Length: 123
Picture 1: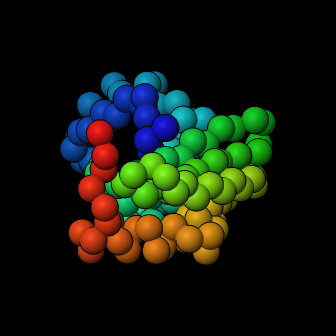
Picture 2: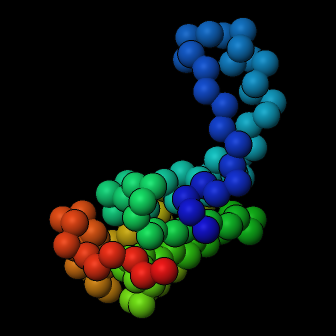
């Protein structure tokens, strides 16, 4: 799925203590950790909304598992990777996932997409 797919986010002013105290009980720690890993991967891949990048993190106890992929615009080439580690290292695990994807060939795919030289998606 797309990064943070299905997650509900609430924005407010950082200094607004009243609102922050009202929304604090809505924060789900496991989801926060998973999204941190997914977003770290996306940031390292320099991805955006129109780029075929996916990641899904899951917590089982203290262990974080994340799977991810980068595809070309036609969907013919898909690079996949996965990583595991302790939840305290969520950001580092997401970055490691992205690095593995880049090493496996995602860099070339992303370079083509970002340069606008990739083939147009077929319908």
